[in-house]
Image (cartoon, rainbow, N blue to C red; front, side):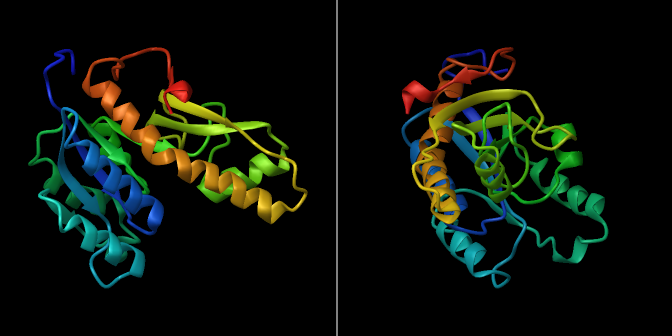
Length: 224
């Protein structure tokens, strides 16, 4: 896969589009797709217009792109997640893509990631912590960690445990004793790195500087 330097990297994006973070990531990926050999084959959102103000803003933004958009509300499938995944698979299987990238997608993808190469952006180093972004930050504070970072990892059945593709790191400043300020500082560092990190990963994949079959995670800290 992706062994031809001239080959376009074809990706699908999946997002719940809840907030500014997801929106900024998709904006950045769309912009870089105009400069490097990647093509966004589709953007999937598990919300339809009118369900949430954040996803409404997200959908308004991506509607301005010349990219196929798939929206299937997950609201009616809370009791039958496999049926929901089957509906998604029936739609995305019509596209030709090398991988799926989850950018703020809040649902489990068991059937999807077992059929397609699926990668997720997680706000921690490969060594952890696992969990949602706010849980990760609270764990870092409680454990008085001096470093954290971001990673893009393969999605497997065990949450946040798949093989790491790329990562970057940053120092945590413990100069303030105020837990809320410390939380916000770490969150600010994460948001400041997310877009450039994910775009650098896609750029290096598209130019064959890294590949999905690589055994050792690539540290991109010095590129950011």
